[in-house]
Amino acid sequence: MRLPPPAHDAPLPPARPGAYGTRVLPGVPYAAIPGVRPLELDLVLPPETEGPVPCVVFLHGGGWRAGSRRSMGPAFEGAAPTPFELVAWAGVAVAGADYRLSGEALWPAQLHDVKAAVRWLRARGGELGIDIGRIAAWGESAGGHLAALLGLTPGDPTLEGGVGVTGPSSAVAAVAAWYAPSDLRTVAAGIGADPADPASREALLLGAPVPSVPDAAALASPVTHVSPGAPPFLLLHGRSDRMIACAQSERLRDELRAAGAEVDLHVYDGADHMWLGAPEAARETARETARDALDRTIAFLRERLHI
Image (cartoon, rainbow, N blue to C red; front, side, top):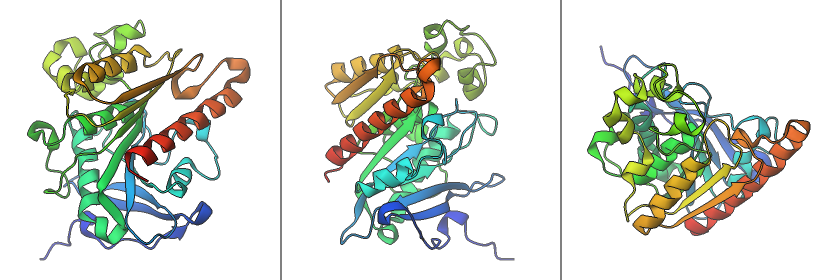
């Protein structure tokens, strides 16, 4: 009996119209893993243009334990147009990709998955109208951690994996990371939690309390992969973040600067995780901060992807 081709080789679905002339391809499989649901992405393309367009891979947050490619947190809930449509309207295609959560697979499966998403985009770039030389990564919280690793570990055979399409490069040209952990070994201490807690987000990702697996924790930490060849980074963080301390972004900024890489860190005073603010004005403050973060990210992507 002949087996069907893997889901990631299937023809592309028809696009449906999005805001401002953007085009949306939802639920496109980018990798098929035996015994696991096909991994999917939603692609939002800019309005029709004459030539190929740059693309950014967006990776959701949720502590590697929850979340989906369709969510960017409460500050953008119900937003119309969506943040991805705004980015696409600005000329950058957005591929919002799911990846295996820590209840489905342990580290480094999550990084293997998102690298597969970049490889798939390169393999299908001609069909999609994407410029395979201008692909960036963008993520929030746990997704920002994975976006940073995409930028810092190109060609690393230990972390590349064999998921989905193999062959094309998984390197990215720029990274935007919102309130992301950069050193899993210090996340707990930074918020006054127990580093040895077996139920922490980091422990569930690694499969053991962080102090008991120091090598794995180091390998999973972006700060340990910084080199002079790192792409440009934009780091955004709230000064009052109670889930991922702002020091995590400050540490990554310092390491990138020391290596001679380009990096810009902007800190929002009073902002908590997911841009939440003071309780009496939480929703409006979060929306204003989130929109500023989105505007900064769009400007960064347009500059670094040469639009």
